[in-house]
Length: 190
Image (cartoon, rainbow, N blue to C red; front, side, top):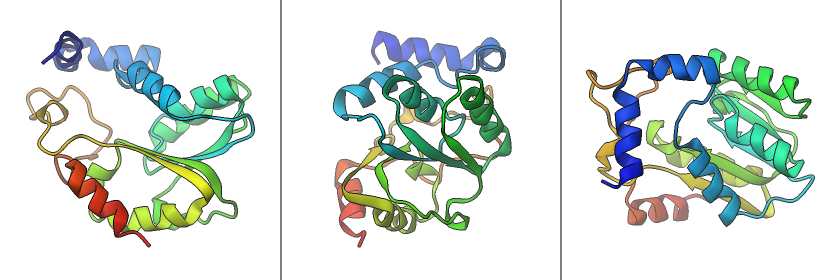
């Protein structure tokens, strides 16, 4: 495991982790690394409409709105997380909309330029259904951006004694996806 990976693992196991999160509102120490990869690999244009499926605290959508003047909708099923996303969006005068709901309960009237699906698929009972719905929400030429743990990537799977905090019962339904599994899953979407 590289140095950054060890530091992240160490921070996850410390008792101050939850306090750090509550004080600073940053859910993961590595979020800035994920954001950097996202920005380097995707081109965001002013005015883009983004759907952030499994938005959590709205960290990525709010930051993209601030940096690139995009707008979007963030959906998450946990009210506490959505409340934080709304508070940050309002405080920074961003035009994002956050919805507390299961994905299948939301009706969208517009299509999106990009859909973020970051660390979500491993939590779903049947990700094919959600991916099919997402594909219908993308504009022609739109981009689906997925991040998921690799299959059997143990650094994402914490045992109960190590897990300092969770967002409710947001357990993984599977450890992750191999590249082949993810490719097959995406090819099966109509």
